Image 1 (cartoon, rainbow, N blue to C red):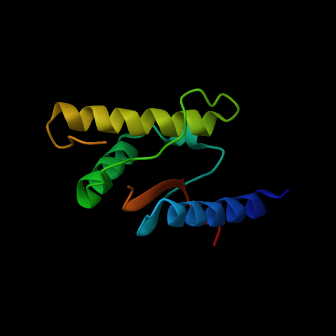
Image 2 (tube, rainbow, N blue to C red; image 1 turned 45 degrees about the horizontal axis):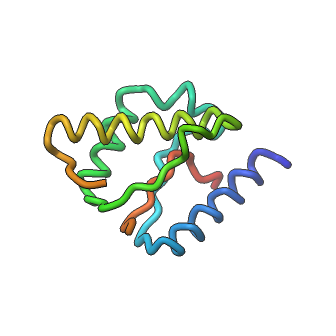
Length: 110
């Protein structure tokens, strides 16, 4: 399966899953699929993620399991999400973990 097709399929799956959990919106951060392990730890990624959490004030955040050892990208997403939450808890800007928005790390292929 070509990467472009895979990304398109994942985007559609993400949007469908968002509807199932009652999300109002889907946000893609524009990072490259299959390269997240390298990109995700840039300071601007964590800042963007924290700003989105502050803006949308979700009561629940769904992310990949830390046990997902098949895909390094999934583990990287888990780590950055939990780090952002921990940092925000420390500074008092986040106090709770029904999704109102879904935040996806990969970018659309179009």
